Length: 250
Ligand code: NAP
Image (cartoon, rainbow, N blue to C red):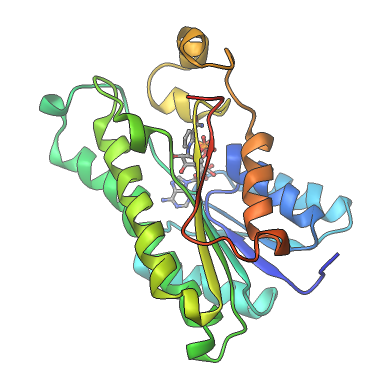
């Protein structure tokens, strides 16, 4: 177990982020559980990690806002130590509709939460982890989506397009900082059993679509967390700019 590693997971109070927090804490990471509103849920993730012998803190920050990202990383510098991993995970989905019905306020909410936040957090992480800035290297995992490949027609093309941007960020940033000791990879989950489908207006969405998934079922948050944990690990030491589809064959 490597006990000196420190990770920030954005949006770790629930769903995939919460599952990733416990998975990588079990690998020896001290974990910052970032959240937006769900303080009790974030505290509960921290409690689970501490009860299992790990180290964790919960930090509230809207990661789409530059000043709050500064606050988040400063809290980690002060309370956990030298950063070695970032999991860009916080994401937003809104009610299903066609592109010709989407207003600019919705587009801005989706793009700032799903794209701007990933850039802001990557920037802050690079300034801490890059050997060019005196850091010791590290790893970034971006949580994208199978929607980036599929497009989500009639449901949320805005969300799918935001994840397409994350795929491009992953490719470009991985090359930009490969020689500075930082690996950058992405996971692309398919239909995963979390509350995000409530925000899309269809809590039972996975049941409706499961016959279209080659494995005939939705995935569990822990199944995505395992892929993220591997990408962060030494076992993935020569892997950068790569994508793991965790989508049941979809
Ligand atoms: P979720 O259960 O809805 O959880 C979303 C998390 O993001 C929560 O912890 C939430 O915090 C946090 N969050 C939202 N906006 C934030 C902001 N501005 N600043 C900080 N935290 C914020 O979602 P999920 O399904 O686990 O999704 C996690 C990631 O996986 C997202 O990027 C999503 O697009 C991606 N993904 C999910 C699926 C799926 O089927 N579930 C499929 C493909 C990709 P609060 O609890 O405080 O609100």
